[in-house]
Image (cartoon, rainbow, N blue to C red; front, side):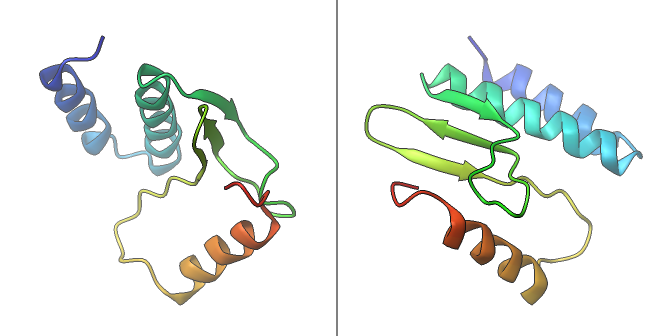
Length: 95
């Protein structure tokens, strides 16, 4: 079970990592663990948003989420939104 202080410590460690690629991969794992803790099935590198890659799918009996994690210094722009919309258009209807 994750306690709030442990999550905050993990987040701070990620925040301090200067390697953007590694920081992003570790953030994906952290968020995936949070979904699993809430009893979701997590499928990594899911193809739900083909032809674009999606970080993972999280599903339970009632919900399906397509999860794409971005950790960048700049604000999201129209290209980021367009990439997400493209993934969603290609996702199963339940997502």
